[in-house]
Every structure is written in structure tokens, then in C-alpha cells.
Length: 451
Image (tube, rainbow, N blue to C red; front, side):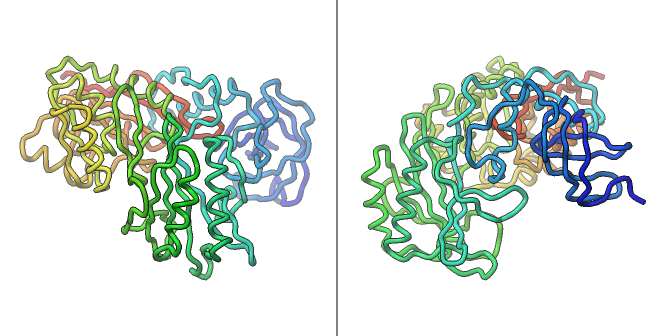
């Protein structure tokens, strides 16, 4: 008979965390995962899932509470899948993330590293400068909000505490537009309806850019633009067309409906124009700390050639260009490359150039053509680097690789491949870019060991 059975209620002492921030306890040797619990707590939980090696429990009662437990500030905590750590105080959140980094490099990468204390925020709310809200239909009701954890069930959200307060007003305008002009919400199961997502970008001045993702062109777009124009800080309205049956937010076709298609953002003293689809760090104050960590590890003297293999709109490329001989940025999203070239121009940096291509294609080609970079900057998406990028880096013999990541697990996997090729890593610096969530940004320097 299994150690545990579904619907059983047990008492459990929590002695660790999963990578997602759920508490972990052990019952007669079996790991039990209980979301919403803290290390050091004794809890009563109801078993909702049993597998051969683990079980999942739902918290029923806290019998002995941790002093690091706090009251979640958001009324939607526990329903919305966005924030999993609001029950942890800031000290516990940072400790959890520091341990998560160490565990990833040890267990996944097989590497012995020093996980430095994670750099946190003094006030870890209202920090995001971009939001993507799914739009759906529940019976005859339109829902705009955020997905529940591990599902596409939309939890209606009036005000997300990670977003600018202006977001609430913008969503209200979108709801009034849809109701007033009978605009249908997308229904994923039947692939019917019109509006799929509302995407909003903000900047440090309170300005905002709105994009509606829809199955086909929006009716009465001029009326929506007029409604948004009444809100202080409005910059523009963009329409993105995505007719496909897909979980990907954006489609390939985009139209500017009103105002401007980019938003001005200042980061590290540099000016950027950022389009809706372009990658840009969502937390500006923490991004500055992260980028300075990356820049210091590059140890630039002004003589180096730097390749930024996943450059986005050129945010780190241009920061590095201020202290390098030249920087070559690679990015596969065409609007982002256009932004990057424009950003280099408005900042007067003529030693930065940009290539529109996939890093796994462009970097090997550049190396075959004889490019010998002094520093390789990597900031890939969550899935990590394509193996062709790592192989090209190894074959080029680049002395220093500065690797920035939003997922310690894939970074540790890639670091292990580079370590096998003779690159050495000493420590990992975490930056709490995504407060209240399990995610953490990290930066490492990998140096080529001398023979």
C-alpha cells in the first residue's frame, strides 16, 4: 500500500521549498509539496495528488507558524497564478531565491559555486512596466485578468499590485469599450470571439502604450483611442492580429491605430524607444542593478569587441558600448532590432551595430567569418541558450562570457556545458527582478581557464 493516499489528512513539518516556492515536508520518507507554507512551519494538509515518489497537499491549518510569514497584500493572492510568495516576508523571499540558485547550480549543473545574497527592493510592489492581461469569455461575461496557476482559467483582476496604478484605469476603459460597442472576448475552447489580450507598457514618467491583441482588426478603434486619450500619460494604441490557435500572445501583423508605436524609457542614463513586442526588463530600478553587475564582470577597458547574442532593443549593448571598442548585437525580433538601431542613434553611440537573426545562426556564422570577440554577453529567454550558441562560444575561444538569466535552472545547465569546455565560474549574483514571485534574475562571469 502507498505511504499516502488521496484525500488523506496529515500533519507535516515543512523543511524546504520547491523551485516554485511551495513548501516541502516529508511523511514517512515521501516528499509532500504544500503551496502556501513556509520552512519551519508545522501544518495540517489534505492530500490532493499522489505519485510514486511524491504527493501534493492543500494547506488546511497552520499548527505552528513561521515568524517570516506575512499577510498577503493582494486580495487575489491564492487565486491568481502570478504571485506565489506574498505569504513570505521580504527576508524569506530573498533567502528562498538565494537557495534556489545554489540548488540549481549544484543539482542541475553539478557545479560548486557561491550563491551571493540576492539584491532585493526596498518596496517590492508596483514595479512592473509591462503587463499582458488575457481576455476571455465565461458564459456571457467578459473576463479580463490573469491566469490561475497552471491553467488558462482567467481570474478577473481589477488591480494588480505589481503594476502601475494607472493599469486599473486602462483596463476599465477597455471593459467600457467592449461593453459599449459589443466587442466579443476570445473564447479559447471554440476559437471564437475577437479580443485575446490587453498588453500595457509603462515608463518611469507615467506614460503608457496600449496594445490589443485580436483575431481580426478592431471595430470602432477611433472611439477606443478617444477614450484612452482622456487618460494622462497616454502615448499610443497598437493593434496586433493573432488569428492562430496558439498559446503565443502576439501574431505577426501589427498596426498603429493612434499616437506612437514606441514608448520612451530611460535606463542607466540611456534613452530607449521600446515597442510593444520588444523584450525589455520589466523592473527598471532592479534592471539597473543587474546591468551594472553584468558590466562590472565584463571588465572592459575600451579595447574590446563585445557580442550581445540576445540583445533585444539594445539595452545592455548600448551600456557596454560606452566602455568597449565595439558591440555587435544579435536579435531575432525585427521590431526590436529597429528599436536597437534607433536607440544607438539617439544616444550617439556609433560603435554599436545590430543583426536581425537567430543567435544560433548568426553567432556561428560570425565566428566562421573570423570574428574573435573578447566578451560574449548572453541574456537568453527562459529556455536558455541554443546548443549552437554555446558551441560557437566554445569554438571561438572567447575569454569572458557574461551570462544573464531569468532561470537559474537553464543557466546552470548551460554553465555545465561551458565548464566542461574549460570555463570557470566563481559566484552567482541574484537580483530580485520579480518580487513576490519565485522567479529571480542572475548574472555570472565564466572565464576561460588558461592552459
